[in-house]
Length: 169
Image 1 (cartoon, rainbow, N blue to C red):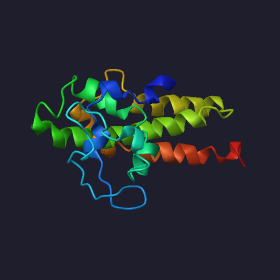
Image 2 (cartoon, helix red, strand yellow; image 1 turned 60 degrees about the vertical axis):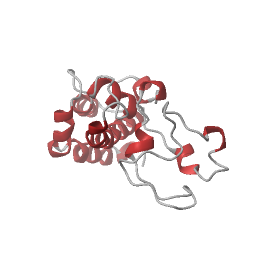
Image 3 (cartoon, rainbow, N blue to C red; image 1 turned 60 degrees about the horizontal axis):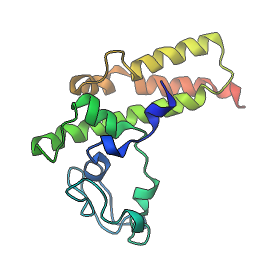
Image 4 (cartoon, rainbow, N blue to C red; image 1 turned 180 degrees about the vertical axis):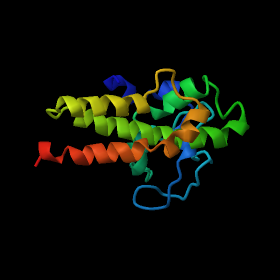
């Protein structure tokens, strides 16, 4: 894993955070928006109409969201650059893929942080196995993403992280 794989690249994404994620009217958002529906601030060109005024317009939640690179990976790797704007049938599968990939990238970020600890050889071996589960050599597909939750990697990552408490206690 490279650190750059966890950095969002909105130019290579299909504005997935603006369509896939739901939000509720609150201090962070001025409206309710269900997942699978485009944010009303999203333009046809997949940019934000109010990007510079998000805070003033009540979209503080957008300012604090980071997909950790999951959006461009789903758009470019899983869907080969296809876009829900060009094919509305892609909204549901891209939404599902994005939610799962976001979880994967969050787990990768946690492991990346843990790798800064003085890990033992056994801990490094376990780290490598978990990272291989999160970054398959032949990449992610819709089918592989659908099977991710059943493979138990998320629970294994959390168990591994808990096992590292002795490094920070």
